[in-house]
Figure (tube, rainbow, N blue to C red):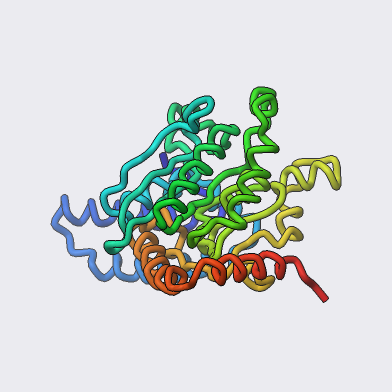
Length: 316
């Protein structure tokens, strides 16, 4: 499925035209190399214009693309020998959160992440990446296991928010999120968090406490969706684009506010344009940051994490 965005239409149209010319040249034997090269240069210029100065709303659209790589896709490319674990040992296995163990450059790690679907059936199975309480309890079970065996924890955040249905509330959604926040704040092993798509509200924050928190360039992180904010402020969800412009939810904004530690660059057009390149940059970041965190004694690690959390949200 190719969910092209409005601002991408000139790019897609020119790519299609280049493809048609290449096919015609191949079939007819006509040399159109000069014409094709001219169009390719024009395409590069259009891409730079389209993607270099994206608005917050355009980044929201890219973050939500169904083609955008999921946690499992990154895990497959970054973590060697990944073994997925299932269930919270209390109720069920929530497919909206995946987790397990593997190695990163020879270091055993625990990896946990929100998981969206890649098509309609998969999205229904994954509940569109919106976890139930058992998903957060599964994540906590794996975090406590990582603490026991002294494995660092890598988190991939990508959810529009925690599932807000009646059954989730009946099974203690708020308590499950709050307990994760409490336990992650004092977990006796390093935690690195990477926002890879949507970071929505408490559903994201329940996997979002870490010693290092970074975001992919076109990901978003906010307490509410632009549609939700515009509905509350102006009683009109159609003003979501305007809401996105004032929410400061982009990776660049949050880095400026010291909420996150790093913005990881994406290929022109988004992570889905080159999954291998994006995965490589995430892996490089993890390999760079983990050794220093693992060398810290536990008391220093937790104190640094505490001070990091306490320092968020200050303003003057």
